[in-house]
Image (cartoon, rainbow, N blue to C red; front, top):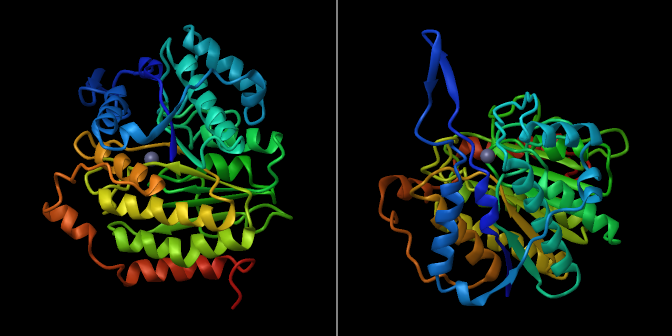
Length: 366
Ligand SMILES: [Zn+2]
């Protein structure tokens, strides 16, 4: 049984594509923003047509309270974001706003809060929030890369406010989880794990040796993986780093920042993960929740920008979290790129994993 949070209202946030100045005039990059609303709508449509649809427990989101947002973001920043959506000045890094951005972002955080409540109240063991905009780059006072409010971080703080003592975040988006790194840097009660493509975006976070502030050493775990890491490489990183660290941390709740932009067809990453790979990744994390938190797990969508593949990858995540089949085959199953995703974890991946273990003496004795 899996809780599913979705509202078509979040589709109203749909900024235009970015532009470059070329020859003194705007040159529009693409026909749509890479984080277009259509991607969310398509993935939802596929989920609705799958065999999972009837088994999902629908959870309605409500706009997040001011308190839920202030637990992570500064009042000054929230005021600035809200005013920008009304036409005020704005300086987000690759994070354009429209009149609909504030409401959509606030509703998405509210969706994560509703999912946390459903799990803590025992209505569902696990839940996935399928919403937009994504959140994992957002910092307390800064919007970055199509993210404005840090959805998962607000969910962590909401769970803490309800008496949950220790929370582990597992972020498998191909980009760096800089938001959680900064927000929880000095916190020994929140474990922030980021699996990402090495030397990727943004550059100011995600370093191997960034492991947490004084008194919180080891609670930031960055796992930079080489380009072209396959399904098996991701699974090995979970088995050899994520699982033992989360076990040793002993969380009361697991939160997942579930970006599907490590997929083989994603335009923003260079990784080789298939829809089946995401299913196994989600299943591994669900097993960890069963083992450690009484099953309690809340996932929220992050990136995922392939129009042809993202829906199948997200369906794979739902299958892995629920343990049930959606009954829809991967249409690219015999594509050469998907076949490459089934390749082994190579020596570069093994070296990357060894380097993370060496950089984390709290969890791995040498
Ligand atoms: Zn991403």
